[in-house]
Image 1 (cartoon, one colour):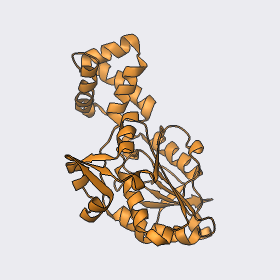
Image 2: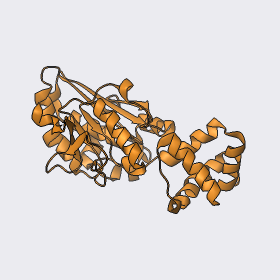
Image 3: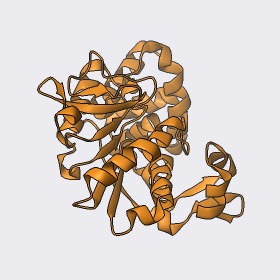
Length: 279
């Protein structure tokens, strides 16, 4: 791979998806894009770039974007954020939203669906506490291929073994050969939509809780800031933002601050003050 080809593809990906690739990630380009090359009957990465340069074929560009922006996901990832959702976030929402009986949750960059389905199972387990409530889980991703997989809700034995408690596997999944499909009662709780985080999420509506975990790490600082600004506009003062354990808002956004003692969970800041304390 020559420097010119690397720069050409990396600049395209930055503009298209916000993904930032440093020169030491050249191996990632080749490993993920060689299968794209084979799909288009090309010899490898070098010929793929030549094809893109010559034709700028949107179908190939879309395949490249999907190959590079599909990230790993698994059920109950890191566990603690979901424990806090069950023990702190949900009880507060049940109290604060008792009048409207409506809760909206956004799983941004949902990949193959494990995160939104984890939330759906937790909400299902709440049982009678949510009787009469309208719960909406909107899950978005840039990749249409990965969204199709998420909608299907079919996972390998390896995928269901990663983080999913055995009691929930037995309760909410049906085995089909060497794969497991999540029950329709859980699938129907999630609405999957194609969405690019570089765009305004205004059309998605307002959300009480936003999960945007392990996404910002792939963006440059200005893009991180813009994404967080857009998210803040779609949240009420007492909303909750989840980021990944390795992510932070420090030096990036003045719209959020860490909720004390709750790693990875952020509250809104309005006029320089914590919005939750003001409300």
